[in-house]
Amino acid sequence: MLPYESIRDAEAALNRTLTFAERLWFEYSATKSDYFLFCHNILFLFVIFTVVPLPMVVVEMMRGGGVDKYKIQPKVRLSFREMFKCYRDVMVMFFLVIGPLQLVSYPSIKFVGIRTGLPLPSGWEIAAQLLVYFTVEDYTNYWMHRFLHGKWGYENIHCVHHEYTAPVAFAAPYAHWAEVLILGIPAFLGPAIAPGHMVTFWLWIALRQIEAIDTHKGYAC
Image (cartoon, rainbow, N blue to C red; front, top):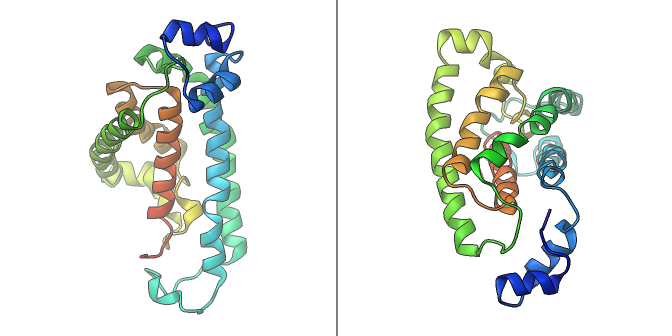
């Protein structure tokens, strides 16, 4: 919650006029707790898991139409029922694991110093922090993924993710609950190393999930 009674108080504290984006942020977040703002991630993830894969569902249902040449496994097609089942299973995981994990992980966000106040970060600051986040996540995720492809990791955890042998966008978050927890570590390390503003954290979580959906879409384009 912002420690200002009004925009005028905020401008006096910063000794400058608020930007348009900062005014919007003040109007939205001034009376909301930091915990409530953090929990926006649950809504964002639900929307991303539901909406972002939909164009690829349409493409997958288009048999022929010039799209087959871009499909990585052109002879393998999933029916609408199979894709809906994947989405349904992802939603079960979302409500039983991902959502509750978001609800209880707020103390870690406060501990590393992710802030919600003013001023908002500049575009350069956001870009620099996102670069760190993607770099750290890519490196650590690689080693976690290698562990999950080892004999024990694959047989006990990672095999669930590979139940869909042909990539499909909805299957990006389709995984064993333990894998969700394990691969959440690389996603959090970047913000822990270079903590920023909550809006940067929101953007990072959204972009990371969109990237995962893109890499699982099953088309090389």
